[in-house]
Image 1: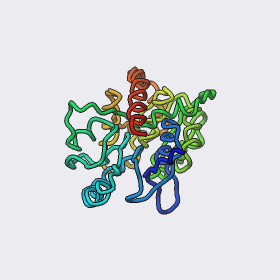
Image 2 (image 1 turned 90 degrees about the vertical axis):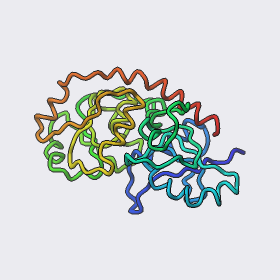
Image 3 (image 1 turned 30 degrees about the vertical axis):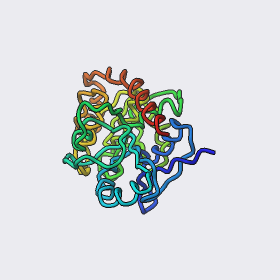
Image 4 (image 1 turned 180 degrees about the horizontal axis):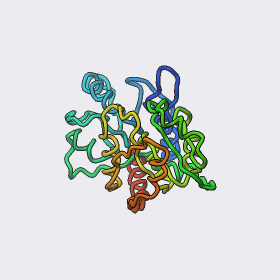
Amino acid sequence: MTKPIRLNFFRSSSGKLNFGDELSPEIVKYVSRRKVEKATKNKYDLIAIGSILESEIKYFKKYYNYVRATLNSPVYVWGSGLILEKSTGKPTFQTLALRGKLTKYNLGIKQAADIAMGDPALFVNDMMRLKPKRSGIGIVPHYSDKTHPIINNLKNIKNVKVIDVERCGSEVCHDIASCDFIVSSSLHGLVVADSFRIPNYRIKLFDNLKGGDFKFRDYASALKRKNINKVEISTPEKLMNIKNFETDFNYQSNIDDICSKLERALKEFF
């Protein structure tokens, strides 16, 4: 019997969920067709969705050569990314895929290296196969933006849905898929919207995310998405006006190819 994939993904010690992180085991299971279990330090095989490389790199450098190398048990990375724009040096883990070119560069991996690029949350559309009736604007605030005053002002507006990210992945994805336009300060709000080929914009709320723009630009680099700059929505009128912006969403045509490369990269070892 094939052993489960031991996956490391972030979950708050408070017990609160964050849908982007919770998608990691679901998507690894879907793509690999294997069971997945959450694993702790020194016991995991794989890191996938999320900006969790930052915290793991120091740990790898300190313990990898003594523990994992001795056991001939490498740690693989599939689609994860850094959260800060700084050079970390070449990692000791085995790189199957990275979220984007900026993470690749800051890890010191040669530009010519043939590594798959993209966020695995782009598989959501294939995995869930939803065909809901779409209507209205969906607002996906990062969990740190949930208390922003504009969010409360928008909750009661017709054809506007405020989507809570602190739930399981499938629930949030259902809500996103039911909208015909998405605005989000959460990276995975944008990624999932792209997966469903829904037009989307990044919005500015409290604007206090660790790492600032880095993870957004990193994600965009894999899709060749030219504009992922944040738009301020200080009033309901500004939110409604976003739909009138002239933007080219043709980059979403790259998603099938990105997912094919990500799938091949994972299945080569899992």
